[in-house]
Amino acid sequence: MIDVVGDDPRGAGEQGGEGIQWLADAGGEVDGVVFARGIPPRELARRMGADPAAATAPISGREIWELDIEVYRPGDVGDGVIRVGESDGWSFAIEYGDSTGGELLTEIAGEGVEVVHFRPMPEQPPALLDYARDGAVLCGFGLGQERWRWGQEPDLLVPELVAASVLEADGVTPCSLGGAPFVGVHRRTLGAVGRRFGLCLPQTVLGELRLPAYVVRGRPGLEPR
View 1: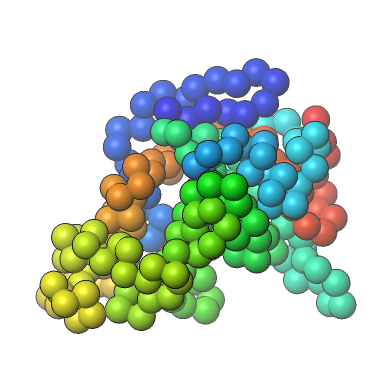
View 2: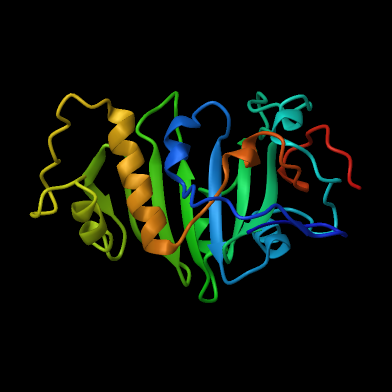
């Protein structure tokens, strides 16, 4: 269930088990997605640098790109904006522009909170995925480069990656693509991570679904409600 977080929360219905595999094709539409379990969406926004009292009225993913968001500003920080909600027990933040999810990952994951952070990185592949908990990054890797891992428990997700035919049983050798495009392997990886943590996000979050937005950095053209 997706909840719009505002003065009038409302559900958007069951999402048909979409999982998060479709994020493999979302490069260019979003700059990152932060999932957090253990805190509500407003607290996630606060931990990412927002004023939790300064949400906008709910806005769609299409409308967000019509706003004055400067990703790069010479001699200064760029603008970072997030739209937040909750899905299947996880708060989430859709990131746009020069957002803060990667820089504040351990802070977001403080006090026992679990965090999964996905960054598409279309201009500087690979796409990156990190899992953090209780103030530490436990594991992370690039999609398509799952054999090279980092974190305090770098092999944490190896069983899921092996089961999804991303890696061979040794946890190092990539499974043969068999002529499949790389995006298909990326979908397998995201599917494995989504199943491991119970992540589900409908594609409508990048389209017509309206969610409150927050400024996390810079001075974009958003007006609080």
